[in-house]
Length: 340
Image (cartoon, rainbow, N blue to C red):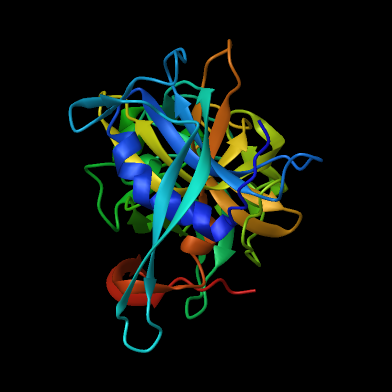
């Protein structure tokens, strides 16, 4: 049946924000995202929502909202609340219909492993290795910094200022205890709709080593775009590339202990990462656009990787001042501004 409605990207993003909680409440649903429809003679330029389910699709059912079973419709109505531009007086609802498509997926897990390589980083011995995704400088600081994920470098028990290690430089827990493999200290981390961590590189030889192993410098960032071809260097899978499928995805990410967290405003890509690649930075030519943190792994269906939009990390004012550890002390910062 031809798509006759013309839903803008802004309207689709609004619908996603309104319905994410209801969809994600059902644990068989792994993600909900905004996509652009294929353009043909029968369709207009329009956007729609895709729901990723981990169960076989049967008659558009299995959505549970507030203990009541409902159907996931092929399209549903959403409402736009209009405001008076001067007085913010309520002006009523404009009702729109948006297409909903279902897709079979698998659980999304964080991309950590016990595999170590030349560009691995960790905050502990023998477990949860990720990737140093890139190095960079920040305005107002002389140091070089590295970037990875919160779940790699901080986790539930970490704290700012703790040592960050290069796993290949330690042969035993004793080496870790003596900081023989320490390359820096944790400067900042966020697990609020982001999975990002930044560390100060204190070992100057490590900077040259990482660059020789292919780790790129971030000099400029850019907004990610749907359909954009991006490339990353991961500690486990090396250099891979893929296209960005959606720039607005809400998803459930499963942790090793069986718990999960819902992340909003994420990037979904065709799969380019495996466990151990957590923290890899996505580059579109010379501009950084994202930070990989998870993926699906099911050989029988199409798999995806997920990343944070890097413009939500750098060159923007935070809603509140942030704790930041640098030069051996905690300070307050209002933004992380890349030095070109």
